[in-house]
Image (cartoon, rainbow, N blue to C red):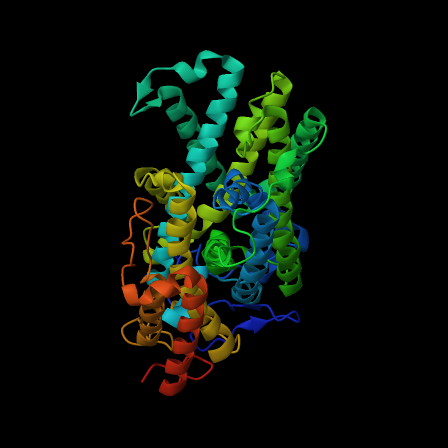
Length: 513
């Protein structure tokens, strides 16, 4: 449905004592090229997510199979468990900063990420970062759904015996495809009910998944009588010259794991009861949860090494070792809840809004979610997890570089150019201060292109380990590739700020000269 209230551009937005702003009646134009109900600011009365809601959101999103496997990927690259956990913890402390900065606009204005991006990129230009974010989310949706489907397949195979020996279609048992499709349909059914349904789901999913993770730890600890030799295994890299060339690209990869959410976190914080709720909720939820989950992963895997003689990093494979039917069913439900929790929140909400922003007249939030589900299957992104090098260095490194570039522009515009002051009605009105040049801000596009090239232009792969040339796409930029997220963010932030200041843009978003 599109907004049809009569235009009254002279109406001023209303601010409450907590600094939250909402539009007065009749403040938006009839022009539905840039407006629909899903993109409109959330009314102040409906902004009621608390600190617990945001913390539960992060607990639910962080506790999933790919984040459990992050430590194993780093250990496979030669780190010991202490180095792996340190890298993951540091990355999540770093990525929390842009998360809080971009999240500020949500409780204050009630707007989603693509509408916030209109202030810097322009009403039409906002589709550039929105489509990049949507493409990344679709790929992640496919990865998570495939992993969740595999988990269900393995555990059901343990319960039903010949389940895994079914005839093959496309190189996989048809029962695996069935698990994948059923899981896919369940995810879309939940998100189709809207953001309030997601909030309720995350509230109970978070503690449930935590209980499941600690239950797995307790089970393996009892069987192992301790945590085995993995905790005593020395690093293959040490802390010297061999460590740092692996550490920095790995750190950027770990940052990139949640760099997606550092852009579209306003999609969630727009429902926040205030800044305190989103700041404390995210601070308590993200870095603590990811570090704890990395530690659980290491301890459980170490226990598996003591019991089975080999480190089993995949929690599904480890849970399948039990012959207890109740234990298998509990593990099955935990895998379902954990994967649904992260996939819907992290990988469906954002592209649903992003696609709605592309064509508000034709695409609603629900329609965008369905499109995301279809695209996430068609592009077959699960191949990206084939090796640690491909997953961490290629996929996460490339994604991190591009998303860091967008984050730099958003932060520079909202905090340094406008000092958090936005003309709320103008974010929906063509011809206003955010129209720039035909709906595009050339300064934002320039900063994005320059930052993006510097961030990912030097992308390289070891022979036979990835799609890039060994010397880098642009050999001169190869030394920057290991720091892609930081390079992209810093470059775009500084360049955008300089270009906007030189153009004389004021805090209200004056047109570019």
